[in-house]
Image (cartoon, rainbow, N blue to C red):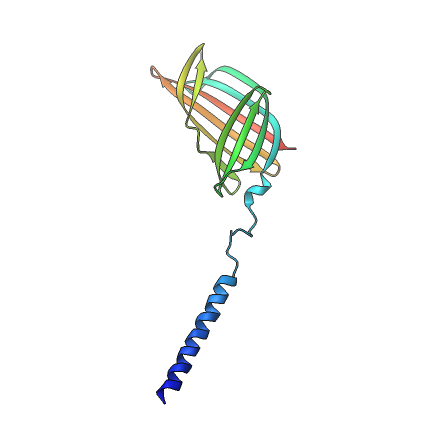
Length: 164
């Protein structure tokens, strides 16, 4: 008489596991393969301009330049990263990877850059860049900075582009 109760109990347990298993595999996970990639809205080509100023001790402006920039934004392999290809004045190309957090981003693969001041080039100056996407516009701010003989030399850049 105990065998029918054991079979019934085992059958009920097996049925419960089957139902739970089918429910968990049938549910769509958030951010899965079928989800919308938030980077898609930023991918494209942006046309714009840039301005840059070289500062001495963060106040005296010694050099200012401006020009055009074309920015191509594409998706990187990592889900929260973008590739930015910047083409300045139809002559100089720069490729960087940016980590995206909602609408803002930080360049993560470039830590140094050469800084030219008064005819002298200072290699390995510290480089940082951050930006954000606002509607169909990209805005990016860059800083290159070095300390030389007690004097801080920095280059502050501002890049803006509108999606084509």
